[in-house]
Length: 370
Ligand SMILES: NC(=O)c1ccc[n+]([C@@H]2O[C@H](COP(=O)([O-])OP(=O)(O)OC[C@H]3O[C@@H](n4cnc5c(N)ncnc54)[C@H](OP(=O)(O)O)[C@@H]3O)[C@@H](O)[C@H]2O)c1
Image (cartoon, rainbow, N blue to C red):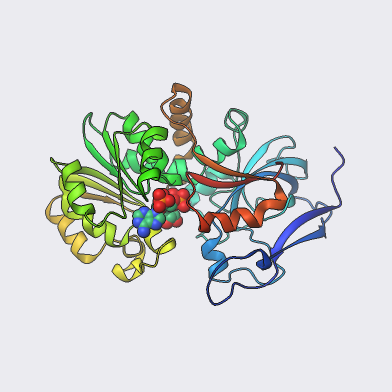
């Protein structure tokens, strides 16, 4: 293939208004020249990106005229001047809203801390999520499944359950945000490990979808005014493990129901990310941002409840082993990708808008090729 001279690129046309609502007028499609490849660079064609741009848009991380380069995407190397980025291979990389892009292993992570030496040695790059995918993973499944199961969502879910393990058969597991990207995988993995799994989702239809699609035992509507009572009824013997990607008041409701010797896998803050809750006000640092208040810390200490709270990149040296276990589960039929794919590069702004206007299930993605 003859590499193109230019790429199509979505950029910020104007900052979000005071209401914070993302509108079509905030985006503009441009055509921009691609630079000639320098030593150590490669040209990639992006197949698909995962979407998670809301905070970056809201915090105005991109200036007018800039694209968002922080998305994790799957791209194919079409030309290369780096032997460690071979032509024909696929990369998992932080990519922009553009169909072609020049990349380099020297790139620093955007929006995240630099990788640890162990992660750098594994990926041979300077960003924790930039790496060449193994062919058996890249070619084993469609792009959307690769980017859901083997990307940040799947590795976070499995690493969390490993670190909260072993999970004994019949243990009682509650998964918040079971309709979400990480939660939908965590719920399936906990079920595959023999637990009794109850999910949480927003509304009756979403709950019905969760139990059907994920084949878990039960799902409760987190918006129900009597949620605490419903949880107590669903867990008459208490909760052994809580997978919590939500934080805020939900964590405070559930924590007292955790059994002695239980585990709290606290990985996210959807309550503040999507809702109005100021979860960050709860306490200091990452644990505070994810809803672990000093009271919850004390309760967990007193009941010998293990808390697992980290960002997956810090443990990325386990990536290959996580990928292998995830691949085995997918092949065995106990784990499936749950994706919400918008098709067509030209539809990228509507995909970002839709992500915050209406609920989606699993990972929101844009397939550039339609
Ligand atoms: N620690 C890590 O390394 C790591 C890795 C990946 C993600 N994360 C974090 O984990 C969180 C979830 O990420 P994700 O990609 O799984 O998100 P996602 O796919 O966008 O899903 C969000 C989920 O949150 C639920 N939700 C929204 N507001 C809620 C509320 N007020 N109370 C309860 N549930 C609520 C939604 O349920 P309904 O749609 O059914 O209402 C949905 O299932 C984010 O904060 C993300 O930054 C952390």
